[in-house]
Image 1: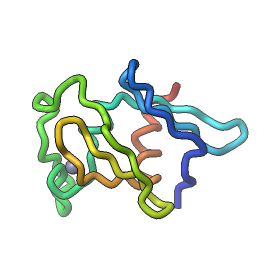
Image 2 (image 1 turned 45 degrees about the vertical axis):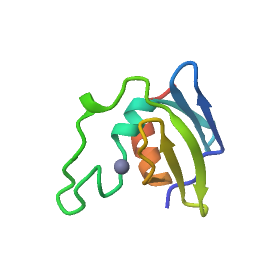
Image 3 (image 1 turned 90 degrees about the horizontal axis):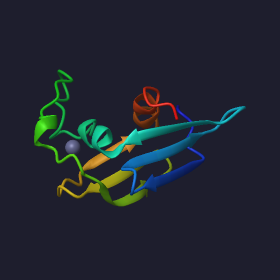
Image 4 (image 1 turned 135 degrees about the vertical axis):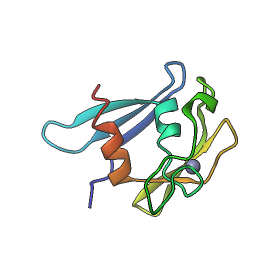
Length: 104
Ligand SMILES: [Zn+2]
């Protein structure tokens, strides 16, 4: 089970989600909104049995941003996006996996 981030900040001007992860020292990652949107793990964005991505990143606006972020229980973060998509539930594991590629 991945640890939840200790801090989550949407840097709207920069178009980045900043996450701080527990540890000593704590680590920070900065994930561009568009990357996060393209990595949406919901069933309409990724085919569950094959893992094949069903969305075309070229069709996602470059300035896509979250319009709403809500916690789902204590295991995931749910995003509503400016392109109207709002079914993506990102578990801490999934966020940590994406964040790994975007150290601050
Ligand atoms: Zn999705």
